[in-house]
Length: 100
Length: 485
Figure 1 (cartoon, chains in turn orange, red):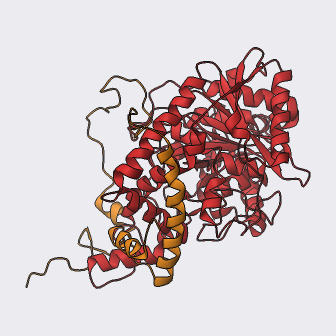
Figure 2 (spheres, chains in turn purple, blue; figure 1 turned 30 degrees about the vertical axis):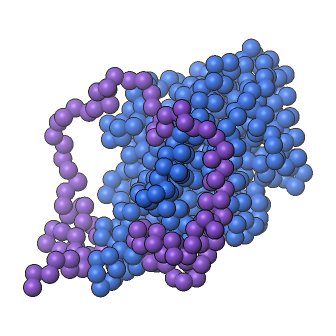
Figure 3 (cartoon, chains in turn blue, red; figure 1 turned 180 degrees about the horizontal axis):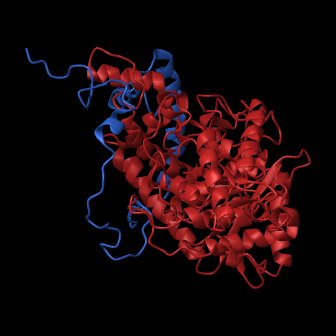
């Protein structure tokens, strides 16, 4: 086993995902299979290879910086239009800080 | 065949108006949708506004734009201001974007008429379009089969004749594989060639927007419109965008075309035969066909599913019930996050979020994520070395043609392995495309993949167009004959 149901529960917490017991069971099986396939990477000696995080092209260091000029923002009302719950110009969420 | 050129000719000759074409295209798409489910939404107001603008320009003798009056469908992971954009997810069922993707804005500036949003796998995660929260798309060529994924709706919309062009997105084969399954052209440009502004992020270092069409020429013309630097996407490239149609003269004499031996292992025999026949056509056109090696190909799937899921787990963190329309209430903030995400995401998205979170978590980062980034560099180096001796590479797109709905749905690893031939192109960031190269005895389309070096889409289009002219002159035609559906 590359991954146990307990580890799956821990990862689900890290990912903020509520999973049912049957989902945990299925997930343990699937992730185990996928991680086993990923072991294939260990066949390769990568000790002298620099990691590639992004496709990069030669360009002057500041070539992709835009001009620093003012532009109209989206606007508060427009930005909040898709909020599940908004009020007083903000997103509303369950209480986080208890003022006592 | 209806093409960008034939529509332009028809409009200028006043044989039909852009408004009429738009109405016709939407009606066609709506009636086909009962069979294929290719569209998730239609945008008639927006389509007519653009179409009427085109008609006005023509009436006044002004240039109506490079895509004048052409009906176009947009994959539902690409934002359209005021037109619902769901990413085929329950989580975004009611999401109305407040802005347009740059590619969408450029299409409309060029007179392209956006008629609707196409179905896809949820957040572009899948190879069969079966992961859509709004039901799968059926392949117009064979309704009991998948159209491929994740851009299955865009491929189907072109294949069923509702639109001339469509936009899709490709992170690990999501344009080329459905193009091959549905028998249309699909193009993944160089990474950074097309701005990702307004493309819902899946794996940012791998995401591309690209065209679908019937003719190679039409995809080349659409790419020219959407490509080029955009200051809203810092990874969009500064490289100038040439007129790709200049490369479409059918002449590939003396070009060096590589055939990677690793791409002919594990193929279904009919698929292999059709690809070999296509390579013979290129040879007969005067190309020098050479055997080459891309030796790290067998590691591509593992590399991809580490990197793509790691990036996805971070990109999808934003769907937390605070900003994007759907919330499942909870006692605490964390409770609300977890329930919203647990109920909102489909099974494949959850699997990838979990995998990505795992490979990035303490103790596993070096073993998986860093390791995969190093193997990615080796895969990119394979291509760099190959392009020292060849101008283009040809290979199959998929090991097999369209499979039946439900056939692979319970086996995620088998589903992932079906992307074996398309994933290396995304990892290296090179331009690659699928062009139809015939059908199996059962009538299922097969695609030939053409790959070229960074920013040299012209070489890729040259090879694909020459092949299409030689094998299917009608599809390649830029005839001025106007025959809308």
